Image (cartoon, rainbow, N blue to C red; front, side, top):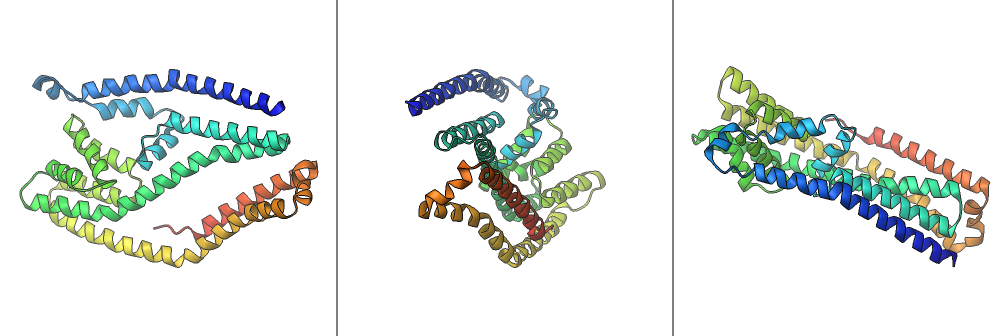
Length: 312
């Protein structure tokens, strides 16, 4: 009977949260999306000449929010997830995990700890996706620079080279250059669009590229030759970066084993000797020990990550 009441409460809370999310998040986002799409379709040449400064209004609307870091992570991940959606997933993970632990064990402290850890899972997954996408971008970036340099040598303008990269290269380089081209094409100044590109793609190679282009625009010079040299430098840096990852592979594997060993041992203990392992979740001292072990485990993993992290 108690389990039925808990399940009914969970369904009611879930329905309320989904309704609130649809009413206050999805509908305003859909309205804003329709407005942006309408602005992206100018009806005449006069509308195009006025300039659709979408990126500037976008920066004004999100630059001062307290969720700017989350927005940057979501943008870098390349998915369709929004900040509101990410926060909703975190909240639902915490609620579901908390209800399950409370129903099975009935320990408030352990329920709170598991809920906090569960709420971090969607954020960790999004951050991992963003890291993988930026790594792939860095691998493809020299090819994009070479394509722009060849376009310049063939007599095309720099924005045309950006358009060629956007059309011919895949994700993630293609969409990022597509956004860069669209922003300057719809009215944003090219230096501002390039600086926005460097801020959106947090790798040092993108900053080198933006600096080289802006310097050439102010001082003049052979931009295609500069881009050729930059492409070769980026490729050499990427080789060094891969070599560093190979060198630090032992430390990363050790960190993964140390992180996964305590949960595996705990599950094995509950499977082999559930009566003895139950003391850790039913006795108040055992709960405090689990919380202390989780805190120490987190500190240890953070320290190991700082040791094996190599700055390039």
